[in-house]
Image (tube, rainbow over all chains, first blue to last red; front, side):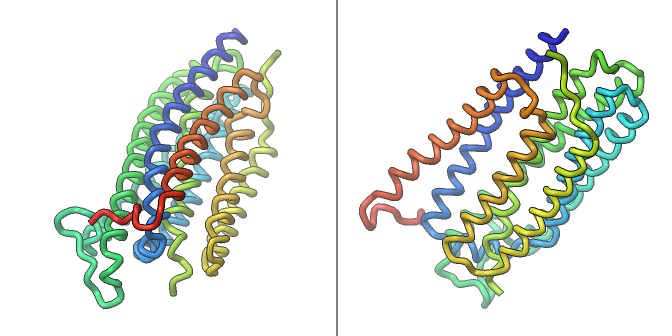
Length: 207
Length: 100
């Protein structure tokens, strides 16, 4: 049993490493284009809502904590704790996506989605920074939407785990599914831990 | 080797630490530290990520094999970004222009 559990954990980590490379390509693009025009990236980042970004960071860290406590509940055979923590994790995850949707909506209204409707024309916007700003928003939408997709998949996984936990399938002897899906959830949290300062905070000093 | 159970107390401490560091990185970003601000932001983010990996993801209590796999993942990411940037950043002036 011990060896089986170990193999499951290792398998999940191998998958997560492919995920590191998946997001890594976008982090690479971010690093390169920001090094080309840091000023434009800072000006574009200043258009993001830092407060909502910070709230979402706290929400996601809280969801990671409740996920860790869910694993603890399954390891110690505390069914009540496991169920409550899984529900809390899903609520925090859904709250994150809700706030994200509000942010996306505002960006579309402000013509900051880097499509045909992109506008960088108001008096406070330096027209020479229009191209780097457009690139910033392209990377912003690519990275945050890929991250949001992972959150949606994570919510689906949690719903399945909750169903089986509710049916009483997990015990201190057998709880690998809870632990392994926890690894996935924490990984998605780690991606956001890097996205928050890199996307939201680089323009904060521009007042 | 039986499974190590991380206590609820340790989880709570890590949670508190992550919240404090989120607050710190938010406050520090209000000041213009020039090039240093990137370094500070990434250092704090890396510490947070390491805490999550070691405690929430139990890597601290996992086997050597898991350690090697986890470290190699981040190592290869560093190679990709490091080698690519060492190319772009050392190109002569005028080589790099923003796509129009």
